Length: 277
Ligand SMILES: C[S@@+](CC[C@H](N)C(=O)[O-])C[C@H]1O[C@@H](n2cnc3c(N)ncnc32)[C@H](O)[C@@H]1O
Image (tube, rainbow, N blue to C red):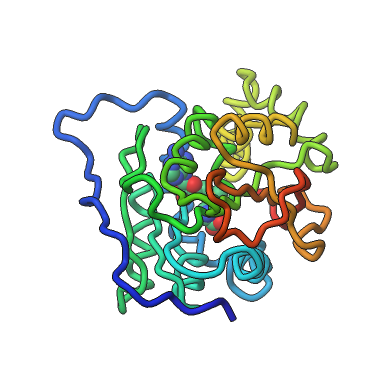
């Protein structure tokens, strides 16, 4: 069990972000990301069902949170249909789930009639998270950073909202995994005119090709670590049980500053997760 929420009032939250009036058109990449995940929203929860492709993810991520985060205020950035956010809220954390895909959030909210999580829809082109500096104990970004247009800026923003000693947990594609070797040539093929023809004929293939096109942030560990350091985040060691060989790698970082509250062992090592999306 995770530690229960510490006594005392929760940090003040700024008002929820809503799309601005006269919002500029989305750029192609953001539009594709939002469209793909909205189209997947209705069936995303199935992935967490028994034998679903993400069935192991809850236990794994919640275990890492339990081992690294003492308690308090968490943000699930890119929460999708909200399974992890609800799970963490049920174990005693105060949780906010945010996402750019409205249908994902609608499913997340519908599955949370007790309002155990605070759900926030982000402007698809957000640059600033709707939190004051230093108010969060942890940010979790599961399978999100590979889709964002500027991961360095997102790392900086995560660092801004974390308290000193706070934790960022994120999963990123593990380039050393054979699935990623296969995706490398396929992602080039996905950009050819032939792929456009094929996806019209086979919609399921189309979804996979879109994924290959939008999962753009294929970076080596040392790139994530260097950019995280630049943002004020120190790579943190994860316990060995969180490091299975998998297409996604689980990385942990600690917000620099007064690390008194941190339970991390900061060594620069990182480990893995179990799904490729
Ligand atoms: C692969 S899904 C993962 C969902 C959830 N974290 C999970 O593990 O089940 C990626 C999610 O990230 C969201 N997303 C993509 N880009 C984002 C961004 N820039 N800001 C916030 N969420 C984003 C998508 O809408 C989608 O719900």
